[in-house]
Image 1 (spheres, rainbow, N blue to C red):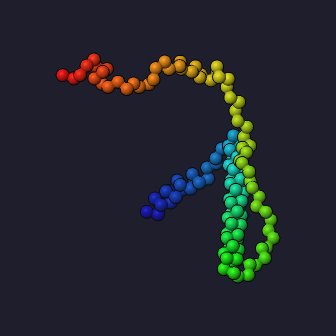
Image 2: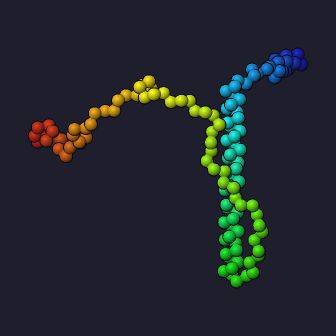
Image 3: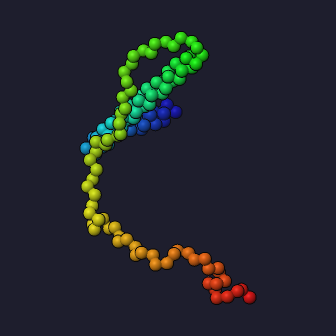
Amino acid sequence: MRLAAALIAATFAASVFAKLPPPTVEDKAKAAEAAAKAAWTEKVGLYQLCLAMERTAAAYRKSLKAAGKDVPVPVATAPCADAGPYMSTITPAAPKPLEASGAHSQPAMAVSPPSTKATAADIAGGPKK
């Protein structure tokens, strides 16, 4: 029993020490893009949190003023910094010209409406017998 357990452990231990191939340039670029997108997402989250805290503080001061209580002096804080739109660091591939992209020409103009007000009896040539 101990021998079988040792063989099973040795079999699985060999796969633990296997080496992965080194990352390619594309893999490194994708990882850098994912890290940049995560950093931008974090900045957007902090901006939205800052705006929410400002709205909450303004509502609190307004409720105190409505209740006739003393409103504390607001503490000066840094203004909320908008992260702006996300700009990818990866350069997109140049688009192919229309002729080389395999696009089809536009269909011809319609000469009649897609449907008519004719009934099935009119189309069939008379009332059903």
